[in-house]
Image 1: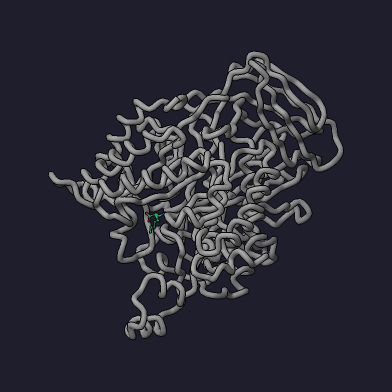
Image 2 (image 1 turned 180 degrees about the vertical axis):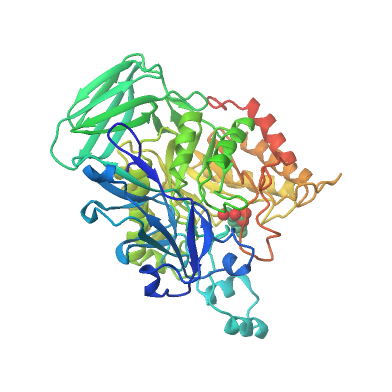
Length: 597
Ligand code: E8X
């Protein structure tokens, strides 16, 4: 799905940033979609509703919540088609216009839209209602657990007080994942227009023929029409042209897009009266032996998993925060991150294209397959939802040069029902390859489980490991942690695959210091990374290190979390811990390309 853009053929109108809002419950009153909310409170959009009010009712809400605003389509729009577009609503949305259901969308991290043209003209100030459901369960992505399973996993069994508490308690979400279940209208909402015959999709796939850049393109339009495509370089000089809905554009002596050295060409598509412009990069990605090559050179991932997470905005799209985070990534001398554990707002990928930052793009499949007797891998509805989410993510992000790999899931259960899991993920792996015109490498990020029983991870293009030797196991014992990591890496050596760590880390309280490093102090976080990195450096097939996490982030309450997950290199308000300075120095010395050659 194309991101809306304003150009001489199209208009974009952002919707108001403060809406009316009211919490509902497991259902909502159907009168609410036809009339102004009975007891509204202001709520900023985009943003999470959980963090905008000073009461637990908003933080801990379970079920539906309802947003409302007034929508006026300017008369000037009436000669064109008009669309209402949502960048992302978490986790499920029903959208009503003057009481009538426009449609529903499931999944909290990808865009959806409705065409309004047939309903125009609308009365001025039409009532736009968006009902939002934050419930997660066994069938959603990310995955929630049933109370019984959550209790069995986290609580001592047979304690009567717990049963009593459960029986008394109103229903609440039990995430099978370690980030706060923020909800609401998380990404921008807009009206946009297109001409009657319009460009529905554009796919541009780069490759290289010597020094000539090739851009294979394909344009889908809503009706038969002539299509033309031009490419401009960064100076605005037209350097290639083509006509027809499919073709190849040739760029002599192409400037490459590379990590740290981004170069973006502007592709302009014209079809009938419509026009769409896209920034593209000429770069290739491929796995060869135990290396991942970008532009034919072995790349080394230096970075972390991130979250869309900050005070006040919660998970709401925040350009200001994103611009700062990109700058901090440069400050750290990092070159990459993983969109753990869901596709991020489109605005972030645009920034990374411009900044030359490499992204591993992850579907929101976190917490899959645990404690349910393999039933997730047998249920066709779960597979269908996972497959659709993967395809929608690839459809949205396929043109970004920053995206070099797709991640099918984070930490699915892979060693309990190894063949079921492998078959399930193999279908998704194939689907990712065929859905992406560039057929980028595909991975699935593995939990610290029994890697010898896990039959899935070894089938991926790149083996991505989350490992916590020295933290969740061998806690505090860095000698043993280094040995254990080496034992595992020796095993992976025989698989002849590129391997990277996509998570490793230690919760660290900023400002807590000790002469003798110990768990939770800043010295320990540095020692942990210093020691484990020395092990990684010994293995030529280890192609990257991504720390967990870029910054401290909010989670549900629990005995393992003191005001959230504290494994950040930065605090939640982006102050560096000692480990940030450590990585800044280390990564200054580790090149993007040709490390361990
Ligand atoms: C952690 C991370 C968590 O935040 C992330 O979302 C997924 C976790 C480690 C799992 N990976 O807890 O900080 C480790 C389990 C070890 C038994």
